[in-house]
Length: 107
Image 1 (cartoon, rainbow, N blue to C red):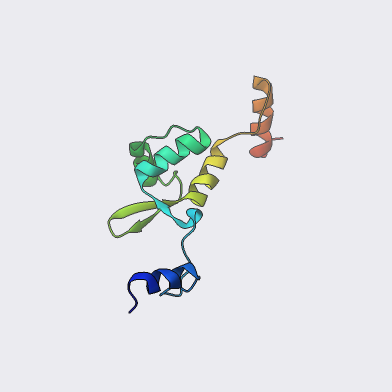
Image 2: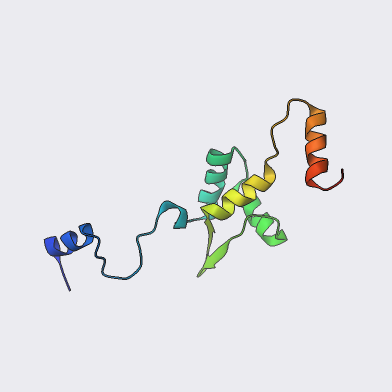
């Protein structure tokens, strides 16, 4: 086992102790509170932590998983769910109705 400078140098040269690559930002998981904040800051969607709990019970929220007793979300799952909540841009109310009809296959 390496300690001190030798260990730091090994990591700096890209040789890790384990075979797994370093986690990038997309692979990091978020708690429900963090997911709520992420949806607000990234997408402008205001869903409280408690709302995400209700959506999880109903099966209508973003995909999540458990790590022991902790619930975790991946950013890509939150992004995919948020995209499903955001419509295409429009200039007037009738634009929104047309967009929704197209998306629902009612044209």
